[in-house]
Image (cartoon, rainbow, N blue to C red; front, side, top):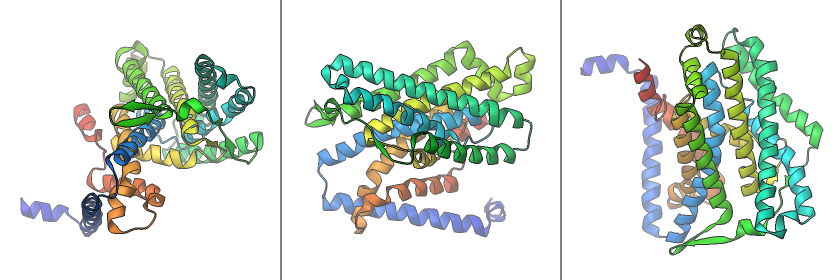
Length: 356
């Protein structure tokens, strides 16, 4: 058995495992030193976890777009980050108009009506962009080698970035600052902001709704059939083109909603706003198991918590100055670790074995 193991292991494998082991050792040592020093209070850790859950909910909603398209078409839609950007960027102008008129501050009912309008517009725009991408950029290339639609997706991403730059301008715009969003809700000895409650609850509801739709509805069963075997699904009477369009509709709508939640949290929107969240959401999709819907949800939540807690927990104890500036590095180091130790993702291997 040892001989077989040594025959299968290469120098590259050994090198990658050494890198992964070193990173894990630094994480363990840094976390232990941070906790021993006691620099952060229980309230601080609670705030970081809640912020991580909110951020993870946004990542999960974006990641679902990646994983839905990959599950059906076996391609990575790198233009999905611009689908995410298009909705909240467009809805900003409606939100700004309602804020300037005082509509959002008149009553709580007005606020939720305004949020409903903002969400509806953003989801409609993102859905429209996603459907146009599928129809114009991806459908003609469906039978092409897999590298061709991948390059097309990257080109479509740049096109959409600069299309919206030309449409709305290069400036960064600030979403309305709503007083209700800053108010806090006491939870025992802790408190949580209304915006964080809104983001966490909205993301969980949408993720649960998507899972129910895929597992229980007739269209969801058709989506799973197309993802399993498109030719056989077509022979069974399923309209494959229609199912693929529905997949892009779902991914686009979730991306638009995630964009508004992200804009409400971080306030700023612009034509480049989708790049970093898009890459991190792709990381979350890979982390959970690309093509696996529950995996994308789990990966997004996990990545959000790690990104929120990681800089303070892992790096502060090592004496690294301004550790929060390295939060993006932590997210991508996590991706490296996943690719080294579990390249199929958290839930990907179980799904693959079940299909086999």
